[in-house]
Length: 404
Image (cartoon, rainbow, N blue to C red; front, side, top):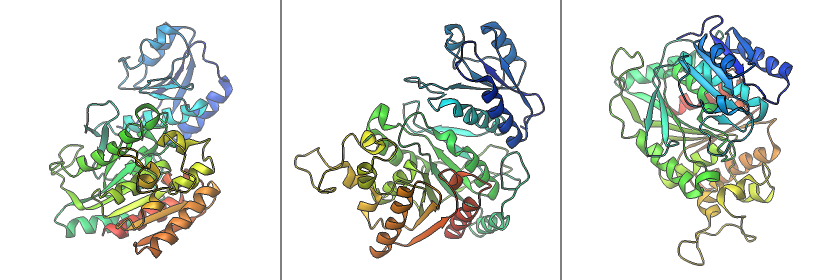
């Protein structure tokens, strides 16, 4: 489905505390970027908001504080796609929340993506609402920025499709693990533009959601990554999503790519033995000990792992059974050698501590005997997951080369 003119509305609930001009600037920028037309409606009351939403096929709703609107969060409102966005943090929320006013950016992107890809298969791997993955099958089209003419090197697509033909039609897979410094305000929607780009290149994509430690604890997070990746390897032949014939996933050609905190989770999964041919860190947090000591993202590491790192460094042994050091188990740099080929990608304009972690990890991994490709180019923390960015173009080519 393509979002047509005037089909998307951003509905702002009464009482929302935010500058109207800034909301309009954010919305207009994203409408232009995604190649859609849309409107922003500041509702007088709940009835006005609901009527504005029902007139469109796609809606992003910033509910505001009013209970009459908030009681409808998660309920069908009429449009085929409704995305709720709270700019404040909301404990227990399952929608986009807590990202500040920039959450509107992500809400619009998520809404348009869902409208354009209605056939995505969501597969659960556990009973929690956060234990699922979205499966994308290869599609047609030119890779590049969603909604605009492709800018990617189409030779990558040709490489993948030639490899599929050589493997009797089996499709290589890229599993994606989102970041967000292990905080539940960030979710798998961060990776959706990469999903679209990779699928257009001929990959199948497994966009993994998982329980974050701020709600569920570190053990739940690491268990979900292992279980979610294992679930991929048990899938039968896939049908649907407009595929002319059933799709067979090539389980010997799986790349697991994680962004930021997801890079740590991806490389830890490799160390723990999850099935993959390539582990990819996209601006990953690869040294948890130094990440804690340098108070990365306001102490995110200790908050996620539940404790600060030990003064003497991580220890593989514990003083008492059940009291294992999570840093020894979880820090990729302290798990070397991982025994899996690695692609370490880092934007030169990112947080300098992340640049340091990436360079040191690559050096020490090679010294430990691992097969490591290190890719550092101009770019910031999000360029590594932006389809049109040169650093992502180089990354996806390296992934294709490794899997073919």
